[in-house]
Image 1 (cartoon, rainbow, N blue to C red):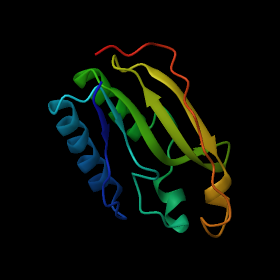
Image 2: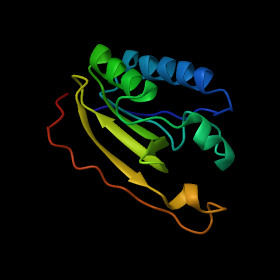
Image 3: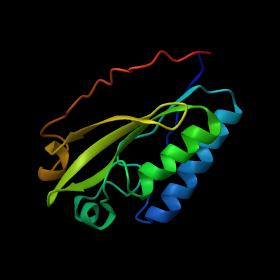
Amino acid sequence: MKLALCQLRVTENKADNLRRCREMLYKAADGGAKMALLPEMFTIAYVTSLFSRAAESCPNGETGLMLQDVAKETGMFIIGGSIPEIENGLLYNTSMSFSSDGAFEGKYLSLIHISEPTRLLSISYAVFCLKKKIHN
């Protein structure tokens, strides 16, 4: 199975970041990738003061819907690194995953980085357990 690790220079322009992310995902699929992984905070620059401006609900916000559409259109499983999520008035560093048919598979959320003044204090690791076997 071909795996695409997508890395992009993230800016303060969320719309531009999402556009470039979408382009990278299509390029990965065109190259034969069956799964793509995106980086942490791929929708907005990693500046904590910007997170509330870019925060959205998951998976039904702008980013989740885009990832769902791309997964469905390309037949690729996508793990969306992380984005700032707002839920019950709190900001989370949330990662979402979508299967190759565009179905939402789950999310992992953490308060750790967003509530801390620096990334050096704590690091959180997440493991996704896939419900379905991914075929070549």
